[in-house]
Amino acid sequence: MCYATVWVRCHQWRLSASRTTLTVPITKDGMGSVTYEYDDETVIVTGGSSGIGRAIALAFGAAGATVINADITPEPKDADATEPTHEAIETDGGTARYVETDVSSRADIESVVEAAREFGGVDVMVNNAGWFTRGDLFSVDEETFDRIHSINTGGVFFGCQAAAADMRDRGEGGVIVNTASISSTHAQADQIPYDSTKGAIKMITQGAAIELAEEDIRVNAVAPGHIATEFGSGAEQKEESVAAGDLVKPIPLDQPGYPSDIAPVVLFLASDQAGYVTGETVYVDGGWQAF
Image (cartoon, rainbow, N blue to C red):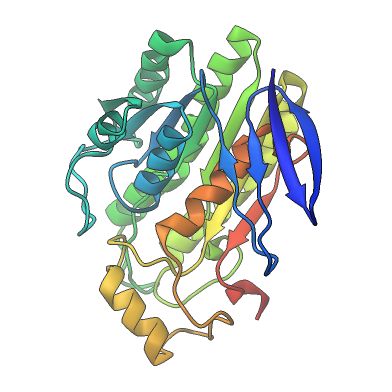
């Protein structure tokens, strides 16, 4: 049994939790910080070699989880990355593995879930891997359309399926967090194929949450906004686009997000502090979708 310690206005509450410990010190200006403990938990992150997936994997590793990076290559694309994700976690004293995984292959997804059995089975499944392509309605061919749906939509659907089956068979419950997008609810020109996959992920999340509730498996999604990563147009161009006001509409916080803004939300959704949260899509977009 672990505990969560929360500090608010000089008072302390000690909250019982079965999997994670949350400590929230509140500073004078009202801002706080949260730390999690995921000792003895096994987390699979698809697409964990770069960008948002890497930040999520590193955050779980820092919190004590055993992390499995399921990606097509271990090599990171991030400009500031000096070593693969699993090696970075191990360098910091954690436990991590890399399993070559193409999420458009159901067999590959099932294999990485099976690999987690070495560590007791998957407790948290983060379906994060994705692909982006741009093109208007008339320029996208069948091969491109099928590819993006097999990676983005199929990867999440079969990731949910494989992880949930393992969790159900072990009878221990678990958590699934999917990476959706502002595109789950907001269409943008020249990216119909991508937007349609993210809309599908939102519905997969809700449907799976309903079906898996009785198995003690929670399913949620995080929806990033304009995040400065190498995904899509690249981190530098995204920063420049926000600064120049070249977006469809402005971001109220007037800055792009970064992978480090997404990872804490995923750790919260996977924690017992979110034990009454399922079927939700949490937007991390600087207020963009509310504008």
